[in-house]
Length: 389
Ligand SMILES: Cc1ncc(COP(=O)(O)O)c(C=O)c1O
Image (tube, rainbow, N blue to C red; front, top):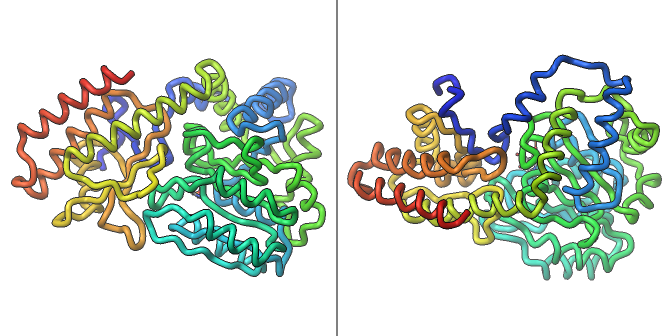
């Protein structure tokens, strides 16, 4: 890859993402200490404003860890070794969470969902009917490896009927990208990641627990030290974080949350949905197929033409056109490419993506699509964006 050139580099991965110019400015500010009145004010504002994105009245905790650390925090604060855990596994990140629960000694049952498909809610219901003493159900809101959006609201409606069971949701590639209503839907544990819809660098996870979950937090017997949320709760109520605060990212988060407050969550969701729609329409015009049967708005997975390799398409797009998207993982490696819709993405980048994807397809098979077709599609793409603001 050529070194990212300020003017024409597009990071269109499902995280990390293009940063907003105001966020980049905030990241470049001189360092301040976290135990200062100046930082206290920022932290207070952030801890209040982030609740809007979680759509919760509960407290949200800011962890200096990647998203996986937040997934671990949800587990270790709510389960004990030997507890029954139901894990929905529909791709890489579902696998990771199930493995994690096993490492902490949970008795894990897996609902295996074919890649590209969403879980059938009745399978969750059936399992809970037979195992009402299940402590936690784990699910990704969006399984990033397949770009599938799971029916979180519907699963939450099932889980809430069981007083001993918590619904823990990995919304790392969903929160801030489309509606996930923690309180209204009754989600018990929710985790988000800084490098996704929060359009920040990688390195922080944000978590929250319902009142139902808090009842289990003192009883949970998994070993926990760094991720013991009770320490963070105590520190936050005194206006601080327990460990050294991640000043740089929290300060940038303040900027993002102010931007979100100014435009409103609905506008944020609208913009991401529009990019997803655009990608689904124009990628299909180029001959790609949609891989996910229940496509998420945060990321689109596209099945590449059968005579081509998704990894090579990804690399060529980066090397020749300075655009980064992702390929597939594991069983989807080579078969799909994945385009992210979160972060600071401008319309001209979307048009350029389609045009460059067209050129990339021609690079591997000049007969696949003509130059004229590529420019027609790029023209239509531009018009579509004008007509669908
Ligand atoms: C759905 C989902 N869960 C978990 C993770 C892991 O997050 P991290 O790589 O920040 O630990 C990711 C990262 O892409 C993800 O998309």
